[in-house]
Amino acid sequence: MFVLIPVCSVSCVLMVMGLRAPSSRDEIDSAVQMLLSLKMSYKAAMGEDYKADCPPGNPAPGNNSGLGATEAEEDFVDPWTVQTSSAKGIDYDKLIVRFGSSKIDKELVNRIERAIGQKPHRFLRRGIFFSHRDMNQILDAYENKKPFYLYTGRGPSSEAMHVGHLIPFIFTKWLQDVFNVPLVIQMTDDEKYLWKDLTLDQAYGYAVENAKDIIACGFDINKTFIFSDLDYMGASPGFYKNVVKIQKHVTFNQVKGIFGFTDSDSIGKISFPAIQAAPSFSNSFPQIFGDKTDVQCLIPCAIDQDPYFRMTRDVAPRIGYPKPALLHSTFFPALQGAQTKMSASDPNSSIFLTDTAKQIKTKVNKHAFSGGRDTVEEHREFGGNCDVDVSFMYLTFFLEDDDRLEQIRKDYTSGAMLTGELKKILIEVLQPLIAEHQARRKEVTDEIVKEFMTPRKLSYDFQ
Image 1 (cartoon, rainbow, N blue to C red):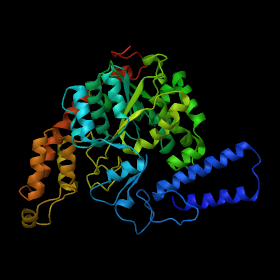
Image 2 (cartoon, one colour):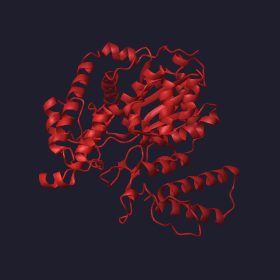
Image 3 (tube, rainbow, N blue to C red):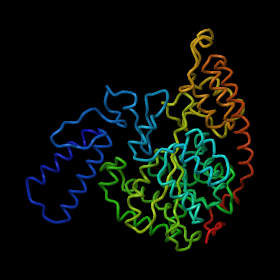
């Protein structure tokens, strides 16, 4: 699909422009924008620039339409779909090249450690947050005592959140603590209404329920503003003005090229990217930043959200704002394997924040994909494969002790540790983690949620 449409559309546009002279400058500009957008779509699909005299070669990583594609070539990532046929998961090095971001290398991790004066979070140490845009600018600002703020979000599609949903919030809380900066959390209930079979009331209700789980991560109420798009945009002229500015400077052809929208998509979907972009600019929150337009934003998010912010970074200079910086995380694997999508409608695809200790044990033992051998004898002789073993993958996210994690890896790879023993360790890590989260969530009252979601001045040190 992604290959045929650009080539065919470019041919059609060229044919039309060759048959008759353009009637206006606007028509010329529109045709040029369409060509540029189609060329971007073609490059995203094929991994090479479109050449009129050169037939397309093999589809690039990200195009999953070719039956003969290799595992790496079948990786497909956009804000709504993540697909790979590899049991190891997405090839993130290729994704960095494709998206044009920068790898979080040892040098950057060391610089973060020097700036904050403490050990970096395990997500940084282990490459779970693996890619960035302009993180060095954020560190420059911090070291020069200039302000920045954090922005992340959640699309509330159901009441049930799973442990994978916690990853950006665990990391964002750490960033808030070590840098001592304000944070805004966008609940995109409007997006879920547009994409899912939900009523507006259901979408808003999920936003409030999900906010309780987010608050239970331990965010500082004096430095955190959580907002529902359905609730906040109508009450904030500053926010809506930025949405309109962004909408004016992004064409339909551009969002088609970036997000793959078609003529049959609703105008709500087409205009939504501007709403997700708006929190990147400080004057969207006048109650927090007043009329300041120069407070830079740092966005921790999964890499699939990057297209929104590539668009945002492109439009920011045109409307007089600084580009937001980003930190990208890898994807959290489903229990059935890194190539399987987690789903709120499938209770066995992940560990949910509502699961009991017994449910956690049953799910891990029954459903967690194993990198072990078929028999104990074979496993003892040849060892297990940590690269595809979901229990080990989960431990890389949640086991704090680096030395213990490395010992587990060595023991499992050598065959000294069996799959059942590895799963037992994971269960012992997950059960208290989920139980502690549930206990904190019970303490989150409706009054606390209302306070977090009330537009107000936040506490921060910079002027």
